Structure formats: C-alpha cells, structure tokens
Length: 422
Image (cartoon, rainbow, N blue to C red; front, side):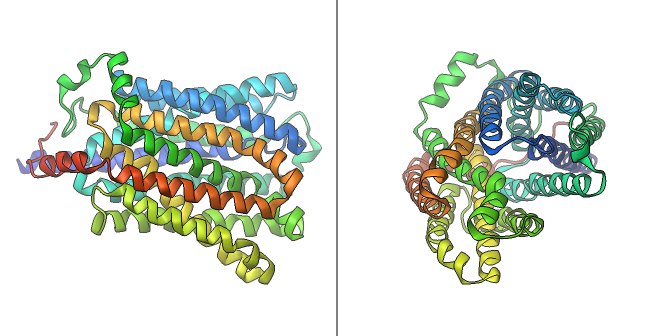
C-alpha cells in the first residue's frame, strides 16, 4: 500500500509539473501574436478577433476529444498544431497566409485548456484541487510575461523591424512550445489509464447525450455567462493596456511595457490568493468567491480614472490590483467552478464549453476597443468594465444557488477513500 501511495504521489508530481510547463509554452505562442507584424490597430483587431473565434472552436473540439480520446493526447495534438502554425508565421508575410496561420494557431491553442483542466481534475481530489489549480494557473501568467520579455528583447537588440519578412519572435515561441510539449510527453509517458475518481463506465456516455447534459445545466450556463464578461475584460487589458497608456495617459512608448507588465506580474498573486481562500473559506463554493472578486473589480474600475489622473504610483497600484483580481477570478470561474459543477466524464467538455463562450468575449474585445474607444474614449471604456463586472458578479450570485446539490455530491465523495490507479 505504501508503495502504491508513493507511486501515486510521484505520478501526480510529474503530471502537475508537466502540465505547468506545457501550458506556459502554449501561452508563449498566444501572447506574442501580432509581434513584429507592423499592423495598424484596426488590422490587428481583425486578426485578434479571428484568432479568438477559432480559439473558441478549438475549445469545443478539444474538450470533446479530452473526454473521448484522453487529455494527454489532446494536449499534445493541440501543441503540435500551434507549433507548426507559429513557426510558419515567422517566415510568412502575405496577409492572407498570415491570417490562415493565425486561425490555425487559434484552433490548436484551444485544445490546451480543456485537456489540461481535465487531466488535473482527474488526478487531484476535491479537497486539494483548488490549491493545485491556483498554482498551476501561474503557468500562463509567467508564460505571458516571458513571451512579452522575449519579444521586447528581440525588438530592441536584433533589429527585428529591419527584417519585415522574418519575425524571430514567432520562431522562438514555437521552439519553446515544442520543448515544453516534449517535456510534457516525457513526464507523462505510460500514464495510467484510470486515475482516482474516474470510473471507466463513465466513458460510455454518447457525445450527443454529454452535450445535452451540459447545455441543460443551469449552473454551467451561469458560469459561461460570467466568463464571457470576465474574459472580454481580461483580454482587452492584456492586449491593449500599452496603447491606452500611450494614447490616453500620455506615457512614453519605452515606459509603457514596464507599466503594463504590472497587470500580469502582480496578477501572479491573484490565483494563489484565490486558491488558498477557496481551500480554507469557500470549499466547493467557488461561485461565491467569484462574486466577491468581481464586485471588487467593479469598484476598482469605477475608481480607476481618478487613480490614473492622481499620480504614476496610483496608476501602478490600480493596474496591479486589477491584475490580481482578474487573474484570481479567472481561475476561480473557468477552473474551480467548472470542476465543481460536473462529474469527471464531462470535465473536458465543460471546460471547453465555458471557455468557448468566454472566447467569444475575447474575440469581441479588439472590436470593442476599436469601435468604443474611437467614439467615447478610454475613460468611458472603464465605465463599461464596471457594467461587465457587475453583470458577471450578479450571474455568480445566481450560479451559487445552483451549487447546493453539486456540493452535497462532492462532500460525500470526498469522504470516500482514494483508489490508487496503479
């Protein structure tokens, strides 16, 4: 028994570290899209919108494949697509080819989240899963920062603008994702088929029945609605914050990258704080935690224009706290709440569905910037963020009421002894 437990712990350590490395690599091929293209804002907005739309399609397909053929295979397949398309972007300059490659990259990127959420949800029990998810989610925050740092270094030191037909940032990102996928493949080689809490009979659910079950779940619908507003807000800030600092606040171009990086740099603390809060105070009540974070975000967005005009320090504090809240709420809603709401056999599809709806918001975010900001300005955009946060927080409150039955099921299962897969 002790031997089985030690093997079980070793497998879980390998799975966590492999999933962390792989998703950091995934994110490096997502965050740098548009780097070095020299596109005007409207053109980049269309590219980002198309990428987001294909990312949503990839989430749905990847979620279904994770439940049907396995999370490990799905994660590696998506990484392969993203590597090929991102590497192609380094040497292609024709607008149509670039758009097609971005669409392919978006589709492959969509496989990552639902497959890895499914993998972690299968291998970690309810009583420990929130902390595991919170630490794992730091992968995409650090991956995004690393992608930004690599791109900035290439622009400043290699004369990237002097080579319009070659974009080394894409090639570097593709290489890093390839290395991450290889590491994940090695760490999860010969992975046991049936982890704890995963009943082989669950896999007999037909695809049509599985999707009908998810779509009929009011809690999944509430979570999807929350994530639509949250992801629209997050990606607007993630991609357009430097432009806001230059055009609205008047920062110099060389200092905007450092100031905007505080959104992700301090955002690292958000998932960790949310994970510990969920573990200690909000066990199986992730939607209640999400509502508190989102109402706090609404208040901060309301204050942001005043803070931005007060001083540089106040601006930095506002951006940092905004990053903490948004990244914390992100893993609570798209990870913890999803896994709390469904059985193991539906975890891949549920994560894919929620994130696909959120990705529709992501696809709309660049169009929102180009249309809304051009007519009303950046200050009014933060007023719109207040509405988004209030709407998402209200949906969280409604979704909390749907969680009583789910919590009861999980509480009973948490009392059952763990079964070793080995």
